[in-house]
Length: 369
Image (tube, rainbow, N blue to C red; front, side, top):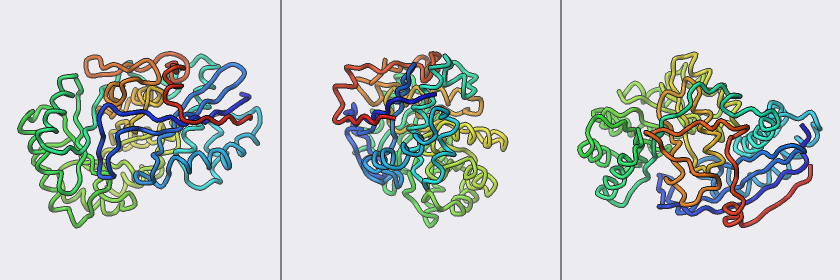
């Protein structure tokens, strides 16, 4: 496959409502959209990094720089034989930067599959035509406000509710949601590394609420801490930020640090490594689910395809477009009986809307290949 041009386009997308986690609050999503052009196709992907290095060490301006100055020159040196399967090994000498590597691999894979007429789902091994959809609910100003929002999402048909938590906003919000909506709803919490092992006794107070899981309660580098916490709680531990590769997943499982894994393709360097994590987890009998990074339809399409694999047995954060954006960059993903359809068209299976993209573009750089 001969790449002719790589376009880096910075966009700013307003959110339909502010979204707050333990890292802070945002009311818009800024991201870099990458378009890879070949003689016969174009591939699209979005960089999941945020403007500030809070969720991970990567940040948006840094990603643009490393893509332009370090990653693309190495890919260019491969020549016409470059495929998505070569990207990870070609870029391995550049330490870290999984989100930067992921966006290039994904855009190249999209173009590659479009040239072959193969969908992401087919290529990755999806076995399901639809995937169950959950929704992530940010930290709110009040419990009454939280209950109103959760009620809205349940009325829309979401099959699982995830509550963001932090010290001071954990036990009581969970209690209130359980009391209002009952024990039948699928409910989980996400701490985004906000606690330490010293908080184990406090976190164990979540056990009576019959949660699906508690996601990433401790810092990402504290695998042994998570293993210790797992022995002190009955709520299953799910790792997110801690898992950056299939090797990380295998180690965490063997050490008893988690019994569930949140797979985010951007965090692990791309969809091919995400598939390997899926396979490792399946071999150990550990279920996985697909996390979200407030993607537009470009990123959501690929995530939904990944979530169609057989070991994605829990509802993910693959919410409908309207959860985040009044105007998406593709035709909107719409909830159908609590699920989203796995795209079947070539590549990511959706078309980018030129006018919608132009309306949110703040800068654009073309790099001849």
